[in-house]
Amino acid sequence: MKKFVNDVDQLLVEALQGLQAAHSDLLELHLDPNYVTRKQPAKKKVALISGGGSGHEPLHCGLIGKGMLDAACPGQVFTSPTPDQMLAAAQAVDNGQGVLFIVKNYAGDVMNFQMAAEMMDRPCATVLVNDDVAVERSQHTTGRRGVAGTLIVEKLVGAAAEAGASLEQCKALGDRVNSRTASMGVALTSCTVPAAGRPTFDIGDGEMEFGVGIHGEPGRRRGPMKPARELVDDLLAAILADLKPERGSEVLLHVNGFGGTPLVELYLLYHCAQKVLEREGIRIGRSLVGNYTTALEMAGASLTVTQFDGEMKSLWDAPVHTAALRW
Image (cartoon, rainbow, N blue to C red; front, side):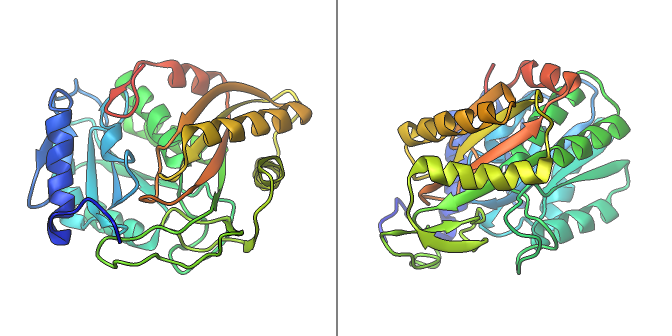
């Protein structure tokens, strides 16, 4: 295993210290328990908190700032944060307008965020993200997994909260965005969790894992490599079968890398996806390409499609200033 590590047990803390130092104008780091907040307190607004295991950067800590999250709780690599992290983060950023937890549908995340919500002595609500159409059940989730669509929820709800939407409005919007978002991914290699010291799964040079999760867990099937256009056909067939968009619909297309895929290949996938959507009479209104919901150094990518409406398009265009996204 080749990784930049001093001490495996200190990897997360040292990485968080580097994150805070690199973006000291945006972020403030809190240790014991570990959580990250906006540097400058937001005006009175609903506080948005997310989190999950580390190894998916820039999700979630890289999405803290104006127009997105107010705090994030990083767990150890691929391990859920604890309820005390979530409770401490909520208490730090709540300013009287309520707290909204945005939670990926993985068993540990769901359980621990629920425990934190039960310990809250202030108004709170939860949006559960389950955009992955690859599986209905797995050993890691109850129902569909929450994957790259989480970023879409955080951006749109973050813009609404920044504009003064109430807790009830933010919760309703988050649920609506989630219901109109579908994702599926494919892996070409495994990744290596530093504490484990070996690849999470074995895969041949001529194989790919179709429908993989963001921790490397299996999806629909393993099969031989195929040209990018054929792979995109398969991914979008599953996504469009789930969303059932009408011809003439407008969507956001997000091509996400898992950490080890270069941008030249991600843009190739976008090109292929654009052709498929055009053929189906679906217009791409907005797009996002890059490594945003990663799985350490895993080579692979996912496609996410969100059916836009007028409000969502306006919220997507709203200003955002985070370590990973700025416009």
